[in-house]
Image (tube, rainbow, N blue to C red; front, side, top):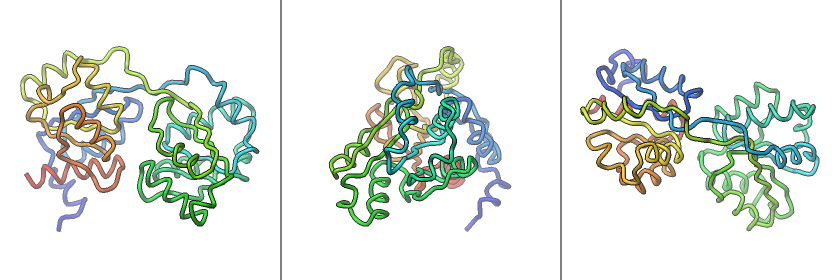
Length: 274
């Protein structure tokens, strides 16, 4: 069986054109790995990370951190924007020492540790259902969640499963907007459309549900099947794949681990096999 180093050396993506839809500021790591595999990466950022419309809820939560038992960070973006606002409010990261901290994904955990924030739980499954299960295991059963207070700083729009599940178990879950994802102002739609029309795109990679939705909105369609006919569709996880399905797409590549490096490796493996 070939190793990742062997795959990089053989460059299974040589001559392949791959669209990545991640926010431009976060696309460099993904692009770099794909390029090591030989791909020509075509950025088509469908989201941009910006500040929330109001800091009121986040500020109130930061000023009353002592009222929480847990803080759950769902992404690197959540960590960056929370810590930035924590500093702006003249609070110190040491105030998190008395809270249990859950980080979804190794990259999120590494960002916290770099800021001298301890991490108690990293779920094995990088989606809301897996987070809830990991929290239940850590506290010793679902009944032990009753009466606990959770702070969840995350995107302004996100799935409600985790806070709903926590509240059904008797916990308090405060979801506060730490940032927003919006559509970029000036995407190069004409170039992407020309490449797709010419059949010059081999694969498109979606890294969140919002990248699928926003890509469809950029092209003013709810059905992406015709637009992406003949293009291999790669999704970072099953929630993203579900959104792709709702827009008429079949997911060809779905990594077992819902991370950017795993997605890049899965794309390379797919084309190595074909």
